[in-house]
Image 1 (cartoon, rainbow, N blue to C red):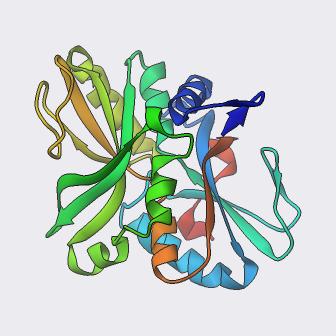
Image 2 (cartoon, helix red, strand yellow; image 1 turned 60 degrees about the horizontal axis):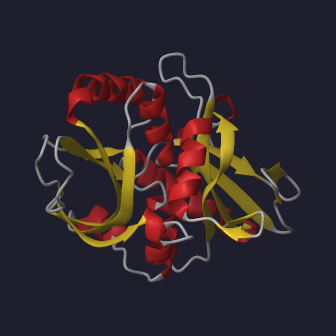
Length: 250
């Protein structure tokens, strides 16, 4: 990602998007950050089934989605010939909402979380936002390291997730805000740690707690695991939440 001809690390783009997020979970109005995924129009039915399965299983940030057809515009992109685009809620939206609630949230990295018998165990692979110009979950997807479908079938596998840190003094605000998010249909919290305690085998900064957020690109990982071609642009742009529909409405 470059801006004005200069390299922009993912951490800088995240900060920019967090400050631009305006979604209020209590009113359910405002802009959320979205990922954009592109597929061939011939794969639409198969991909919608996979997205529906993943979203109904809670393996994404939100079940809200918007479909773009050939010629439609999203951000600075036009959907190409014989293509379909999907805008889905990005996990950075959660950081933006917490920030607007007064919580100084620190996105740390994206990675793979090992799930064993339905329970999250540990991060196995991580990429920090400050070390890459590409979204870490895009990188991990490209390496075909996920086993999200296997996890859905057996309860054991590896899914995409992100780690954030927040000051422990803000715990009450965090709990209240996360509760409001769930009511609004933004449910992608995998685990909230205790202050000064490791979370999924990762240490946290002193006087902080860890928050593990499910990666918004898990449905795309399942599509890829099925051998269907999909191109994903994480943290693509912002969109009004009111423009999106629940996956069951498609």
